[in-house]
Amino acid sequence: MKAVLDMLDLQGIGRIVVGDAADGLSRIVEPVVVIDSREVQEGGIFVALEGERTDGHRYIDDVFAKGASLAVVSEAWYASHGQKDGAAGRRSYLIVDDTVRGLQQMAAAYRRSFTIPVFAVGGSNGKTTTKELIASVLGVGFKVHMSRGNRNNHLGVPLTLLQMKRDTEIAVVEMGINHPGEMELLASIAMPTHGLLTNIGHEHLEFLHDLQGVAAAETRLYEYLNGHGGVCFVNADDPWLLSAASKLERAVLYGLNGCGEGVPHAESAALDPFGRPSFMLCLSQACESVTLSLTGRHNVVNALAAAAAGSYLGLSLREIKEGLENMIPATGWKRLEFQEAGGVMIVNDTYNANPDSMRLAIDLLCDLQCSGRKIAVLGDMLELGSSAELEHEKTGRYIQQSGIDLLFTFGDLSKHFSTGNASRSCGHFESREALASALGDVVASGDAVLFKGSRGMKLEEVADALNHERSTL
Image 1 (tube, rainbow, N blue to C red):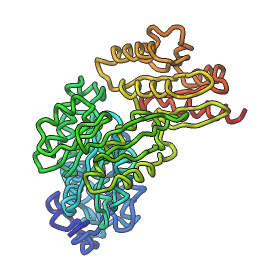
Image 2: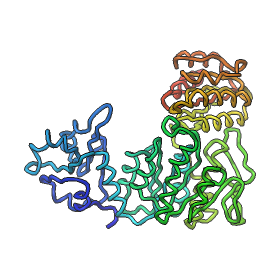
Image 3: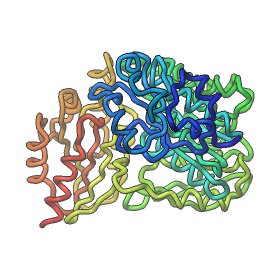
């Protein structure tokens, strides 16, 4: 039955010790499964994970006090703490060797209760944006469940699946990886029927080493789908993905320049003064004008991915246009998020960074129409491993050829951005406070300021400081 976990599912995962709430475990409809004790609901399931900062087993008393019906705990913890109030008490446990694996197995069992399309979205850059666009387009014609926020890893994917409801008609699940083998794991849990990789780029080189390693790890999604009768949507503008698609039995192409009759493509793309793209979306010899609420020319190809998905699943060109234009980024998106403060355009793209997304952000800044200067505030790109210095130097050379007027850098590696950019450089900073102060002294009305760096650089704090300073003028 759809949206159900039953006793057989639980018994296939671990050993069950039941208390007074045993009757409620025989058939759990739309289970509420959490890993944060603060989110426990009456009758819900709590999975105790051991993390770097805390151990979920410490909160077992709390979750049962809040009305949890079941706690998923490790065999080691139960042997030393749990037996005292097991079957004879009010508590019920699912005892497993590894609680992370237990969570994943529970999600896979729940996923198997659904016979619906599950759409996996992976790739190096633009996963979250593309996931949101696909969900918005498919949402015009279907009841869609999608990953929330950045829940795209070995914990986020199972939690996303466990949140599906009985009325879910399509699930759109983001899958993020940074190690070889992770895509296979995520695919085995989500069991996607459709899938898409946005592109192959310089992501997580600390573990994936180079573009070939990234492509090999990401395209495991293609291999899974190909081996399970699934459908792959392929960005034909990406040479790595187009090459991998040659081995696929069921590939649906899309691209900026068109890839054959009926393939979604874009014509006449342009940006407004706030960097929002408009274009003609063309499909099956018909076209519709589309204007996105997202920023950046690169989002046109992300929109084409969503258009390909919608068209394949039977939506009309008009419905696809509606879905694309309905997608509005949430506040706090931090992905090319625009704010105007005291005559200054602030572009907050601080969610994350790698060499490819850094260049796209620089391109956007250069494309913007402003009466003042174009200022880049750039931080380190992390997780690049042995390629870190080289990739930062290459980005410095890219900046050298760009139309940026002024450059501020922050972090250990970003000093390499200044290579060949002495005339643009306004200094390299070791503290956010010093950076914010120097930036505030330079920025003037009419300027556009881009903030871009990896998540760990926390450049949004500097962006917020500039926003506050300019707003109080």
